[in-house]
Length: 524
Image (cartoon, rainbow, N blue to C red; front, top):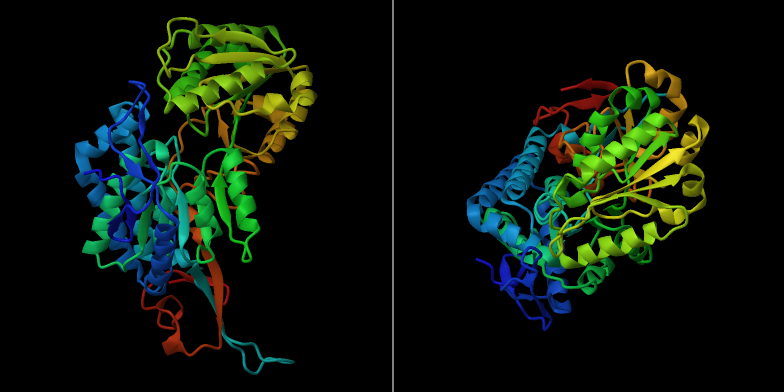
């Protein structure tokens, strides 16, 4: 049941004076539940509880944390139709998408449970002492990852489950041994509260310390600012706009004790169309990309917002085919009327630039908060000379850049901001002639795709969901998959420590039977 209150640890609380409602973009009306924004006192209490919980939770075994994570997954599934219907009311997204995202969320939680249950993720390293080494004795050194402390997670607008309350950031932080305070996204506060209730139930049944999780309502930016500024918060996870992520990064850097902000932000995900591929299958590629551009109303961080090719008759034919295919697809609802207005504003800003040609724009009847998909085209030289053309238009929008030759194509890629993904569409053996294009792309993206579409992020160990700034604030880490746990830990060494006082991961007898590196040799 939705109460509209905040979870301060296990306790529901509503001491604040600011009230708000979520919005149904399909009906263009507010939903009925009233939410109360967290007060400064409630924020401080949540952080204090998290800090106290950390002292105990950081010592919990992998088995204990795995039990907690699996219990969260079970409790989310137990919410059943109430969660699915609330999700749909707050997003305008269909039931199938809600169920698919719930499955992904549950899968993430279970994958982290498996990771910490096995235990080798701490990367235990042991270099034994050589007391008679000359000219100086070698000490015994043992290293492993330890958790950072309380983590603040910002709910994402476009993924109310998988990137929000119990999403990847939360699952990874809890797995690492860090208590989590979620700043709930105002667009799906009801979905967030239901998931928070599942986490609280799981915490109770598995004996987690009070304060291991809190969920705070927020209608604006103030709650987030107070959380990031709080001296007992030790790291931040964010998925959203460049503007929002950069503001948090700057705020965290100005603290007396600066803390890491792991933000996944803007990306236009360049796609390179090589000549032979266009010559042989331009219609097929156009149909595939029309579907990718409009998937989820273009509201994916991996939406293909930039398509690059070398001027030719084949590229012209592709452009006509893409325009035809994209106009066949019925427009769909965006997540919120403010996101819809942002789409229109940014689209208009790009279209108003010099030498931008609109080659396709759905011109049939479009309902309120439904986005008319659009394709524009520019020359390579114009794209290079106008940074406004690099703007991410969040929605079903893509820009075709027509380059004069291979050299200009490489130049366009090299001058891009950091991106989450890059894609190469080519035919057999064609890629060998474009090594420089691949190299340029590798320097700008976190993941490169061969003959596919960027939409769709597989949750697995080999996935990298991140990239050079501004795709993310630290390109060394992924926001998806079990390796994302490394964002919430730091390496720590014990020197000449008595064996019986070491954590189990570093004891001589290896009671956990995990894989470790001992004097340079991997062994269990």
